[in-house]
Amino acid sequence: MHLVIVNQYGLPAGASGITRHGDLGAELVRRGHHVTVIAARFNYLTRDSGSAGASAVETHSGVVFRWLDTGSYRTNDRQRMRSMLSFTLRSIWSGLRLHPRPDVIMASSPHLLVGISGIVLARRYRVPLVFEVRDLWPSALVDLRAIRRGGLGHRGLELLERLCYRLADRIVIVPPHADRRVREMGTDPRRCVHVPNASQLDASVSAPIPDTLKAIFAACGSREILLYAGAQGVSNGLEVVLDALDHLRSTDLATYERLAVVLIGDGGRHDELVREASERGHPRLYFHPPIDKAAVPGALAQATLLLVAFADADVYRYGLSPNKLFDYLAAGRPVLLASRLDDTPVSEADAGWCYEPGSGPSLAEGIANLLALPPDERVLMGLRGQELVRRRYTIAVTGAQLETALRELVGPNG
Image (tube, rainbow, N blue to C red):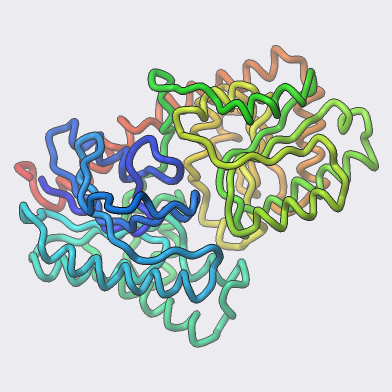
């Protein structure tokens, strides 16, 4: 079977960022399939456009990546919209020159224009179309005030969302309850198959953490470390960290004094977070740029608690399946997760604490309660999280789930 994945933000296994399709693709290659990913050269997380003269076609872990130049951007502005439009057109052109012929096309959100690429290519080759829902646009855009509810942009994107669901032969959902949204948009949710994200950390290829990050951990001294590693955009809602520290400083000075916070990453809100943190005067809040994926296990091992933050948005009622959640659980540390749902992996495994998204006092309560536990109990929390990941959230498990879904479309000989 030759699977072609169209995802503007696709990255190879081991890269800094969301490597879902690099990892799943490598697993499918290991199972005897051929995988091509059509993606943009620009990495929105690291803001890297690659080196000049780099090849337009590269192979990583057996997965062929066809890199497209679509321009760079810093925030959710017109430059990003132009990049999306450019990717849509270029991915169609690139996809029309594929060899060997694809057996199935998978178009992956978040942005819905990629659905047009998938539809065109699937029709051209007369093969099944899989539409993958990773982030629910335009619902997320409305909740995060990127577009106006009921406005022309919102209505246009909803029409495109409905079209993607209706024309897809199968809908792969990453948020566990996204089938509810599919039903709301008039498509039979029985066409959905849940393939969650999974842990991508591989201790066998771990690398030392950078000296600059070692210096930060050294500065933390004997304090308990709350660590976040990932994007720092509007959807991540990291302002809650500042609010939680404010709350602890005013209501629980003992916990505040024994805590240090380390935020690793970059994104559209990074500069504002750094500026606001300085203004609020939290001396043990540290920022560090993104690090290589191979260095992440070593960084997570330095933490006492790990944070998965999201903004307060109604769209998250459809569930959460962020990469970092499973990486954190695999690291064997208690996790603080922003969620109002009662069926999260954290709650299922009793591997941490769920706090109210956007609520500094709620996060502060979670921090204080976890740090008040005996160290042995926190160790048990970490072990329960690791066991859940081993059973259900590894690339081998999710790769098998995706392979099964694809074989149902292309037949057992695909």
